[in-house]
Image 1 (tube, rainbow, N blue to C red):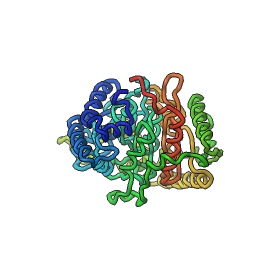
Image 2: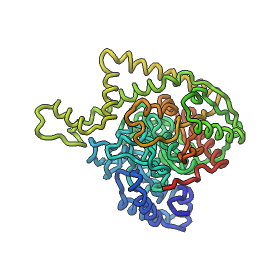
Image 3: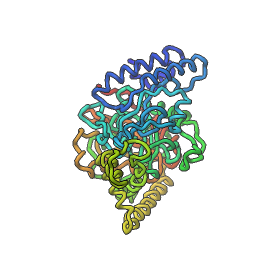
Length: 486
């Protein structure tokens, strides 16, 4: 097996046994990145010099016996997360020259754990999208089929991990932006509980929905990364002061006796037959291992999409007001006649069409005379969605469903149909509205070789349960061991 095909755990074991150095591993990953990027376009910024410098430091730590599970393991960071001295563009022209003077908290924690950063991953502009086609710098391609989208908004992160140009990656999930691309690229991805991972230093899209989380090739790999980035951060007022358990220990729990809910609203019309078949087969695997299945109802699911596309654009309208060409990012031109002209020119040049669409939708929903009818009402229905999950988790330990109604679609197929694009997240966005953890892992391939994902959802701070389910499933199957043809 080539080095880029190793799992994070396997690579870390080789490093700690001194059978390979971090510099050697990093050089192999840089070569893999250079070989795949012309076709993939998963990275917006590459940092090979920084990676090799960090790898040298990691080798010193490994030689001194002070290394941890992530020390010396090459990875990538979604380009919406601040990295000191390295551009953070959010895939937008309005931030094309922005170099943060500080690291996001999660990046600082990864650096303390021995991060080797290969670069910054491509995404939908400001994380607004489900296909990574909204990037101002061009789309990312799916390594399983270059004609297909990788999912979004964290498409570059998922594609890179799948293709072997990063052992793990950090993405963000506002309505499914970790789980959906993980599903489409055949890797494991987790959106932790809202507040479990600090948002300090992450460019905000929708502040009550955004949450950072890891991508990896296996559930065991994912647990190692989550162990490092989880935990309270006093710099983030929404960070939860809840102790972080031993996620590695959760891998040994098994699933016998766990009650799994099958929401009837997630298995209705609109699911591609091959997706349904793969998910139902995966559920049978869990049942064979001792899990108990129960049909449940999440009755307000049908309103989730409408609620999300009022709340998220409204919060985006507020958050993106700061990009005015004055303080940082895209510079204003000197010849503007008025302040309003300068704002209009800067923002119309700097934002792409999907971002502009959502700013306009959000501004409308927040405007005088419409706030109560739209944003206020959406908040009330959001509460009903949260109660649905609360009542469900009084009956079951976790919920199982598809990640998306279909496997990855072709590039360009839905770019001119926003509603069809938004429907890609119909099974994922409710967990964001409720602040719950969710995980995607591969459970099969379509007849054309495109990955299919299985989703687990749990109560607040029940990441351990999701990891136990995922580990048990992967021990019984081999879907996560498959590699794309790129």
